[in-house]
Structures are given as structure tokens and as C-alpha cells.
Image (tube, rainbow, N blue to C red):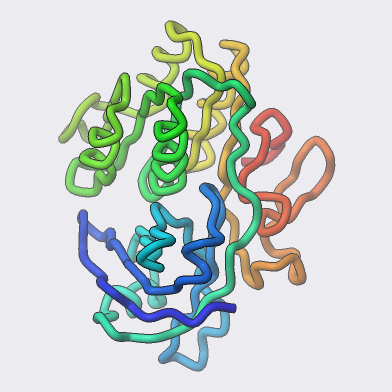
Length: 256
């Protein structure tokens, strides 16, 4: 359990916010791909916390940045938080990405609010000297996040896609991702976003003979394996996303 204080809470795209919190112990403990479970006070009828992936942390400053989409009453109330607001969270949750040892070139693929976990990973890989290419997209250009951040990492290839064609490629991000996989010598693929998107990325990675991991979204009601509401069907049986994930070997996922 960590108490935290809001440092900033700003809209960065249509319906998407960046929340920066002060939580020193958490900032020193998080690893790319892990998540936190945040308490949203103010409505006694809502008992469940909201699980969120993080996009960056600063151990020296003691801060953590999380991007979230406003999709329900809880996140709507969260979007009204102002600097100084206090609450608490559980974390770090689950286990994150595990790029293979000796990885020299990686592809990250994100869709919608699935961009933060792969951006966080890309930042760590780039700092370790790994060449990172990025494919990411959204429904429309006004909902697109991560463009400046990926550009700042010096990615070798950046491919953007939007469903309506208002930014980048007109269509699904799986198409440019598949093109890169077919033409590039990758050691590793990491993806997060809608299930159908991740399944297609995983298929393309398998065809290219590349190890692929996927971060799955489930309703993590408790966040520590007690409630079994976030189960993922895998080739090894049912696994709880909050403890065995949220990152899984894509070849082991049966139901996306």
C-alpha cells in the first residue's frame, strides 16, 4: 500500500489524461509492464480500485506518471483531481516485460491506451542500447498519444495508424507492424492494446519467428490474486493477470 499526492493531472489527448503522483517508495520499485491499483474516493457504491499501467517513473524525484482514458464514473472523477489531492494505491502489481538477453532490435506495438506500457519498455530498451522501432495507433488523431515521446527516444522506425485516417496510416496498426516484422530482423516484440490487435501482432511475430510478449487487460478487482476475476486462458491453464501477468508469452495465450 502506498499513499500518494497528485502533482499534476492534465489532458493530453481527447479523453486521455496524464496523472503525475508523488509516491517515492513506489517510484523506486516499479518495473516496465507492472501496474498499480488506485483507490478513487468519493463514491461509497464503488468498492473496486482502478488498475493502471504506468508510463514513467523518477526515483530521484519520487514521482510516477500514469496515462488513463476516461471511460467510466471512476476515471471521470479521477480526471477532476487537482494538485495536492491525496489517495492510496496498491503496487507494484504483477510482473512486466522480459526482453530476451542479448536483444539488439525490438518492435513495440501499442493501440489506444495500450501505448503507456510499451512506451515505458521502449525507454528502458533504448537506454540499454537496443534499437527500438515503434508502431502505435488510435481511433483518430485527436486520441493519439506518445508521438513526441517515441520521437524523443530516437526510434529507428516510427509508424502511426488511425482508424479514420486523420493521422498516419489509414487503418489498423497491425498492418504497418506486420510489414516491419516481415522485413526486419527483430529479436523481440512487445504489444499492448485491444485483444484482436494483439492477437494479430502475435500471429505476425510467430510467422517471422520472433519472440512476442503481450500485456493483457482484465478486470483486476483485487490486484493480488484473491478474487479470480482477471483470469486469462493459456495453454498452461487459467492464469490470473494480476499475478502471472499482465505480461504473457503471446504464444501461450488462448483467449485474447
